[in-house]
Image (cartoon, rainbow, N blue to C red; front, side, top):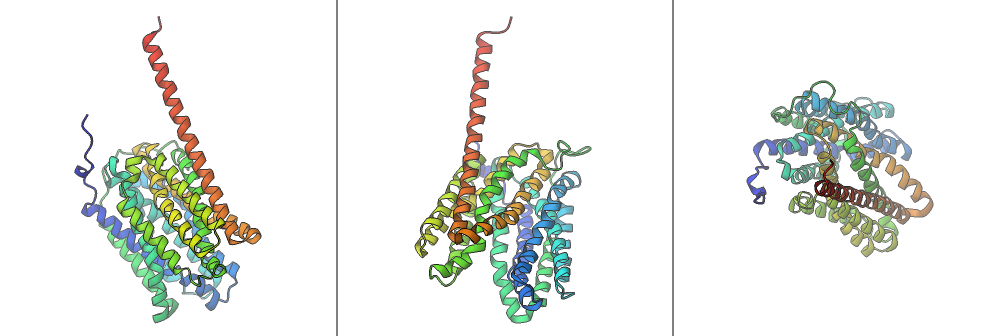
Length: 405
């Protein structure tokens, strides 16, 4: 059989660009409020550091609660309804942030944002895989993640600018308008034909079993991200760097470069090999940060960490999708992405406890340990699968050579 020419399979179509554009507007909205929420709680509402942590992290609570349900709904009723309704809910919730200057009210609005975030992400990420040819699905996920990461990277810059120009109220309005734009773009998307789902999609379980294994590995690997984002801004003072801007600029630039120019790596190597490679790079990067307590150590470690982080999500989502039927794609994305929320919620707590006892470098070391555990688990599981295939092949040969009477 002649090799498949991936260039013949269309991917970057207007329909694909529309959903990626909607995603960029949506995540730009989320990124815009990232620097504003902590400052608003601290300076306007007079909240403590604990209150800041609650207000920031409660978004993940709403997302975790809805993601698995959103996946099932997407398989049953379509992706577009999740995209439009999710973005609309986020837009309304952000406009409510400053309606009442009260911490409980803000927390309630943030939970609402999390519910909308879960619906939008599951709908949009699943539609991206719907639009992609099977042999280019990993590439499509990588391009989609550029929209996600680009919005979250440039959004804070926009948020800081708007705060300086118009205050917190202006930030909530700008973010609400961006989320509204995402809903409008999402309205013009079209569903992709797929097998009709009759009754309850999948095996009837809320969590899709095909996504639990890859999701668990994702959870383990992304604890390193929780350590990196939480403690690098504080760690730079210990090593005399002064500001974390250069570190995050290096990290963000490398992630975007790998996800754009290395978008086909998961398709070429396969989800499992790409995942092992990503977790190995993450482990090396966090280990370097933990053991080499200088500016050079932080920058070198960031290079390895960024290489791993850029491949991890696309590789493991590709692996999860490959273990499920086409009718379960939405539930796979919903279950799988909920492990991201858990990693940033529970993971932040874990590395925070480690940092309290062993310092920031100890937190980086904890990230390395969890990433290494995920790498070993994924590699061992791959070896077992190969062994089963070999044994099955040997049994098939024996059965052929010595047929039953």
